Image 1 (cartoon, one colour):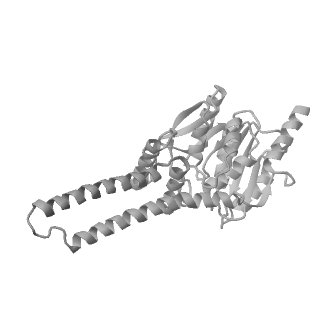
Image 2 (cartoon, helix red, strand yellow):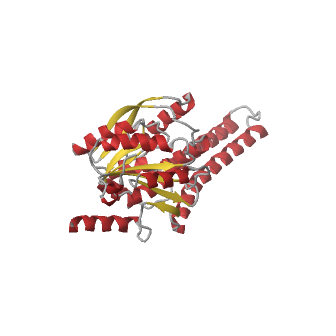
Image 3 (cartoon, one colour):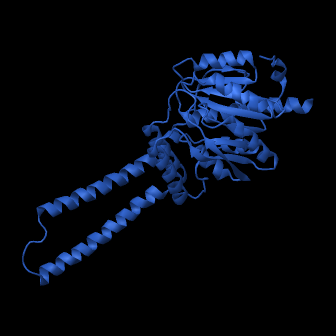
Length: 339
């Protein structure tokens, strides 16, 4: 491998951020392909790998890659804080003028980054990847993903590009804007759309996972969808209100109908015990659903009020531990200016 120590002092133009969770089989290939792609730019770059509480050798491999090439930098979190938080940790430590988010599993091909950089040079602040095909994924995941994007665009006040993921390039000012949002239940795709600026997409074919198994279980998908909806929409709360008014209206009509039947209809019991029981159970179910919706929002308020840090770092490779991430960037920028 070529000696890359001369890159150590250069401020990166591009930062590639990739969260890692039990990806020991992929990391060497990820580094190889990213290096081949980014060396073509002729600009300084860095690869920021965030180990999100892996139980395999991922952290050790990150340390080895950093020793081989100082452009590879690593952060090992104290436990598994989940994908969105790991990405946030990477964004906070990235120093580039443009930052690219990419999954470590190589489903999103690093070669597309060159197209994103070309669009960035044209003046776009966000360049997101749009999936035209998705290899190696079940019909259930494809269907739910398609429905998710269309539903969330209907019920939120922002337009999130359909059939996109977290694979995207962001200009420094977009990254800084996203980092000003301190919420804990994070939905980065929505946050990036919310900040605005000039955004465009590039189309690509998503590949099957290079090695290992997916970490995005049905449970995590459900939690992710709840975070997305509650972060950017009041629609579930409004739905509870609509249900209340609808049931109240139906009940009022039913009361009037029962009175009319009692006064003018045959004297046979139309409403028995079973009907009453069904009505009570139905109303009880609606009330519990409404309380559950309110509880979801209340729980998120509780998370924010506690004010805990988003993540804790166990180890770092390639960063100045004496400085917080944003302070480190300011020092790098002032050093660059003084030169």
